[in-house]
Amino acid sequence: MEFLTTVCLLIISYIIIRVSFSLFGIGVPTNLPPGPLRLPIIGNIHLLGDQPHISLAKLAKTHGPIMSLKLGHITTLVISSVDAAKEVLQKQDLAFSDRYVPDALHACNHSQYSVAWIPVCTEWRTLRRILNTNIFSHNSLETTQNLRSQKVEELIAYCRKASLSNDYVDIGRAAFRTSLNLLSNTTFSKDLTDPYDDSGREFKEVVGNIMLEAGKPNLVDYFPVLKNIDPQGIRRRLSRHFGKVLEIFEELIQERMRMGRLNEVDVLDVCLKLIQDNPTEINQTCIKSLFLDLFAAGTDTTSSTLEWAMAEVLRKPHVMNKAKNELEEVIGRNKVVQEDDLLRLPYLSCIVKETLRLHPAVPFLLPRKVRTQVKLNGYIIPKGTQVLVNAWAIGRDPNVWEDSLEFNPERFLGSGLDVRGQDFGLIPFGAGRRICPGLPLATRMIPMMLGSLLNNFDWNLGKSIQPKDLDMTEKFGITLAKANPLCLVPIPMAY
Image 1 (cartoon, helix red, strand yellow):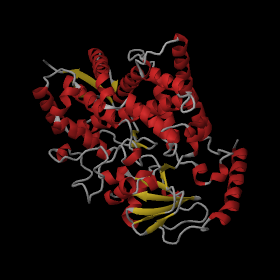
Image 2: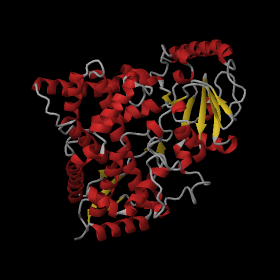
Image 3: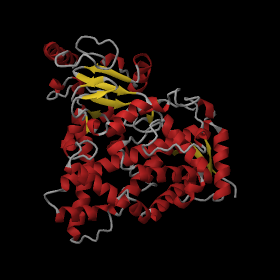
Image 4: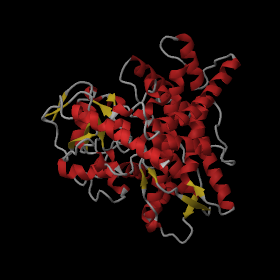
């Protein structure tokens, strides 16, 4: 095995060396933004480390908020300031609106149909319209309001059962099941998991693996000549993960089609009716990829954000007490937060915003690609350049945020700052035409779940762990998860 590994590495090194001499420095403008010194062949790959969002934030302090790197063969632009992000995501949004698709996302041809990854085009507009009209529009969200309330009540019931036996609750996993069943009921009118038998564990693991594999540094992305080899096996593994999820969706679609009627009571009905009426515009492959985007992003990012929020609040007892007092005064103790309550819970909203500032679910957003050569702050950015907007670094920029590393929800009280893509110091969902379509749902579900967990239980870390010693290590992927799950014992609050 070691011999084969060595042979493979030698072959890969030979290919890289052969192509690098002909690729480096040809046709690249001389007035790129500043950046660190590039090594032969690998460029700046060695500077990424296992936490690229942190590594690139540190480099930006030396080379500036508009920084260029060479990652193997790929010219990469890193944006790390409010002004630069506004220029890229708003003022010149169209020029930067294409996606730079990681090789792994070509698994199962997903990138050809995914609303997250295809270019801005007719097909993209059709898929966005389906999302915006049938899932995330104000009317659609109002229609499914009772469903969200029901799923949050089920989360609280699950925690209450655990409290009776003094069992730990894995906060991330519990939030994942809640988000999964919410989306599956909205889309398919059925639960995909039972909270009491852990039947959603495999789905969570598959989605977690998708986010992890898709976010891994991949040699193929830096040296496209290696595409057919897939030396790290990332695309092969992602094909298996995608295949498992797509198989579930295929079974649900076939089950619905055998029923022989489309009452348009859920998203699947609407999509099948669209296929029936416009077969040249959309097909089942597009719909399955749309569902894959929806379930992967909508479950993992929501559960990760809730887990970070609970962890941060636990580490700040005065924040916990202030949130509990607000909840008790506004809705009463031991009640589930309803959507109509959210506008009357400003401090809870501040906690969510502060969590998204420090822990944006997607630290680089999704990578963009320059459509045509463009000028940015006097620099020339070549066509095809990969663009990374470091939302993690912008959210911690000391030039924008006072005590930028401190979890302090009070900073948002009365500020008017929001996460909807207009305040570029706080862009966890992105901005511009490619802003995350799930923003309206996330800004309802996260505070409802968080507020309900805080209003119904006290929370014990157990094992003599002090809140200030809670492990806050990050695990980098497309989403930024806690490296170690947050497991807490819920303690019922006295009436």
